[in-house]
Amino acid sequence: MGRWEPNARERLAKAALELYGERGYEQTTVAEIAQRAGLTERTFFRHYADKREVLFGGSTAVEELFVNAVAGAPGSAAPIDAIAAGLEAVAGLFDDRRDHSRRRQAVIVANAELRERELIKLASIAAALADALRGRGVAEPAASLTAEAGVAVFKVGFERWVEAAEERAMSQVMREALAELKAVTAGG
Image (cartoon, rainbow, N blue to C red):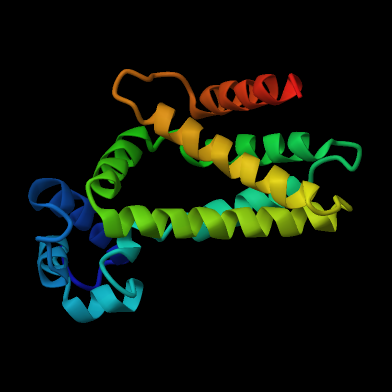
């Protein structure tokens, strides 16, 4: 493949994930990723700030979709039901990406720096969701509590969905995780 071909970003991401799985995240260099993708280091840095961002490049799209679905939920929807709409929307992004998600998650779980980055991204999503809920008229602390609960449901549901034995659709796993949260909180 030539350097001028249009799918450089995807090629870099694929090469990085392969190398991280083969050698480990810490042992893989940007130069090796670029070489595997048939590109230059300069091209790598045009697409990604660093080798961590290869794994987190899609988080902005996840956040935007989640927030837009929450903001666009029917006005009569309870805050947790607006979060449920966001979970459904986000689950759709992952429909055909289970294998990729499993490999990505294995790399992240194996590295403390990447786990920390994942938590930072989730915190960003929670803050954006809280803003969306406040925009819907949800007062504090309910907006922040609901947003954090939604991110917890996403995190737990995602971790279940990428388990080797799990074959159900992500949306089904998310609905189940949300139902578990509702069951736990109903006793209060």
